[in-house]
Length: 196
Image (cartoon, rainbow, N blue to C red; front, top):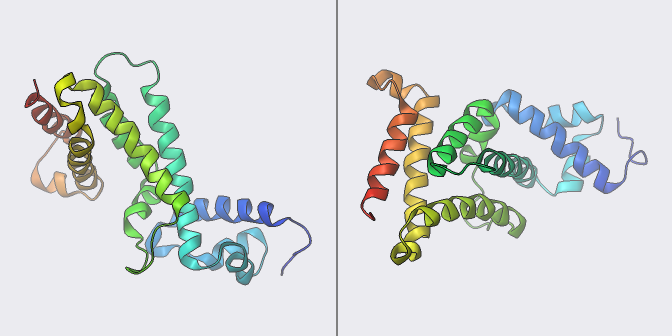
């Protein structure tokens, strides 16, 4: 099955991540199959682990691709927006999650073993998205409160994320919430109002 001389290690890495991301987007984390990825690219499963190191590193690389796409999406949705940028950011959060439900969900469904640290490259991708949100929160705060932007951004992200998850898993429908995005925006506005 293997065609080891057909591709360089970097080409293989890109093929694996691209095929893995497609598989994750279609199947979701619970049904994700590294064997299916290997079959798709026409290599043995051992090749995947030889290139990426382990199943966990494969999933991290795939989730890293999702984080890159999400960061790009958020940046593009905010580009040129002058008014109510926090609303635009919340809209983009919901949109990306809905459009990429399985891949987005895998970001939260997958966990490394407790004794294993996130690789630096992956932590940097998480930071890139978080920094975008912190910048938006900071720009909406009065100058005297800008130092509170990181902690506030984390809390606001948690609130928006919870609203988004409840939307995707049907909980809000059961609770009779007809406008989850509007509810998330209202909670953000409530929190921001504390700072004038």
